[in-house]
Amino acid sequence: MMIHIERRLLSAAMAASLWGLVMLMPVNPAHADDSFYLPPEPLPAGLPGDVIRSRSSLAGPPGARALADAWQVMYMSTDGLGKPAVVTGTVLVPKGEDPAAVPIIGLAPGTAGPAFRCAPSKMIDKGAYYEQPAINDMLARGYAVAVTDYVGYHPNPATTYIVGESMGAALLNVVRAAQRLPEAGLSESAPVMLRGYSQGGGAAMWAGEMLGSYAPELNLRGIAAGGVPANLAQVALPLNGQDGFGVLLYALLGQDNLYPELSLAPFLNAQGQQAVADMVSDMCVLELLQDFQGVSLSDVTDINPLTGPRLQRIAENELGSAGIGVPVYQYHEVEDGLVAYGQAVSLRNQYCNAGVNLTWQAQDTEGSSGVIRHINLAYRGNEGVNQFIDQVMAGVPPASNCAASP
Image (cartoon, rainbow, N blue to C red):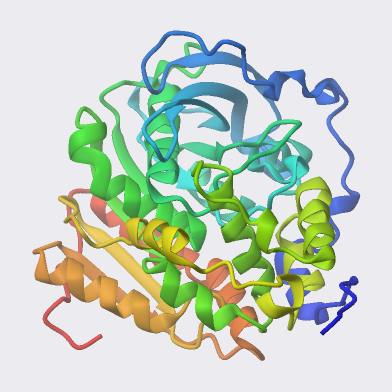
C-alpha cells in the first residue's frame, strides 16, 4: 500500500497543549552559533559529570528569567553501551537564594524529537520549552533545576531515544555537572530529587535503578515519574497504525543510533526512507504526532523490522529488574494513548514486590483521545509531583500505598 505522509492537523486542543505558538519565538541572537553543541574530537579525558564547556543562557520566557539565572552546559556522560559520551543541558539556579544551600531537581525531559532544534536546552533558551511550567514550579519553591538534553543533540543529530542506560546516565550526570559548574555555586552534597514525565519518567526510573552502581555519592532523596514507558514492547506495539506511530518510528531510529548491529534502512521502502530523513532534519514531537497519525509499519517498510536482534535490545531496556532505594511517586493516565497503562501497573507491582517505598497514583483526565489524555497529565500531574517533592525534602515522605490495589 502506497501512502503519502503529509502534515496532518491535530485538534486545536492537542496543538495548544504541546507547543501553542512556541515555534514563532525568536532565537536568542547570542546563541545563533551552534558550535557550542559540537562534541570535541577527540573526547576529553574526564569523569562522568565533568563540565566541558558552559555559557550563560536564558532561563525561559520573561517569567522564568525573573526567577533564575541559567547556563547551558556540555558535560561528560556515558551512552547505553557504557562508552564515554558528551551531553548538553541547562542548569538553573533560583535568584535570591544561597546557591550552596539549595536542593537540586534533576529534570528528565519528555519526548522532544529527533531534530537538533528540538534539544530542550535550545527550547529553554528560546522561551519555548513545553515543560517550562514544571521548571518554574521548582524554581519558585527555591530549588535549582538541572535539565538534560540526553545523548545526541548536535548539528548532525543522532539521539539514542528511549535507551534506558543512556537516559539514566545523562540525568544523573547533569546533576553532577550542575554541582561542578563553578558559576552555579551549588553544593556537591545538596539534596537531590529526580522527576520526569513520559520519556522523562522512564529516564528518572532508570537513574533510580542505576544510582547505587553509577552515582552512589549523590544525595538522592526521591523520584517522581509519570507516564513511564517501562516495557517498550508493550508500549510500542499498540502505537502501530495509531496516533502515536511517529513515536514508535522514532524509537526504532533511536536504537539504530546506538546499537551497531541494528539498522532500519534495509527494511524501509522509499516512503519510509523519506519519512526518516524528514524526521531527523526537522521534526520535533508535535510534528511526529501530526505527520504520522494512523501510519503503520507496513506503510513505511517492506519487511517488519521487529526481528530477533532488535527484540533483544528492546527487552534489555525494560525497567523493573532492580529496586530503587528512595521514595518513589509513580503516576499514570488510565486511558493513556501513548504509553500503555497496563505496563505501568506491572512496573508498579514489580517495585512494590521489591520493597520500594512507592506511592502510586492512577488519574483520569477525561481527554478527548488517548494522546490528549497523555498530554493532559503532563501538566495536571505537576501538582501531585510538587507536593511529593516538598514532602520528601521536608523529611516526611508519604507512606507507600503498595498494599492498596492499583
